[in-house]
Each structure stands twice: as C-alpha cells, then as structure tokens.
Length: 81
Image (cartoon, rainbow, N blue to C red):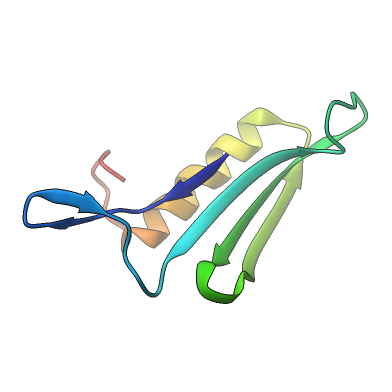
C-alpha cells in the first residue's frame, strides 16, 4: 500500500510533480506468518529512504503511520491529515 499527499489545483486533486513523499507499507516476506510489517517513508524522485519502521504489531504500525502523516502535513492537529 502506498500513500501520497495530493495538492488542490483549481479545485482538482493532483499529485505534485516535485518534493513528493510516499509512505509504503508491506508485509515481508510476502504471505509468510513469520514476516513483519515494514513501513517506509521515501522521497519519490530518487526513492531516497527517509524513515523505516518494522513491527509485527499492526497497532504500532498504525500509530507510527499517524505520526508520520501529521509530520508530513506540518504537524496539524486536525484529523484531515
């Protein structure tokens, strides 16, 4: 799963062309009970990894994801991310 922040341009939501961050979430190794979630924040242009988090706990992943989304949205406290 990947999450990208969209911009509102003339009433339309578009993906920004530069300085785009992606949050990528996956289970690795795929389809293995012994795996774990891996959450990665990257700068899309060169796929530069900024942060990584690994856990078997979906609750830890959820909490980390919420923190990262707030940080990317300039620490706004409203629920709009």
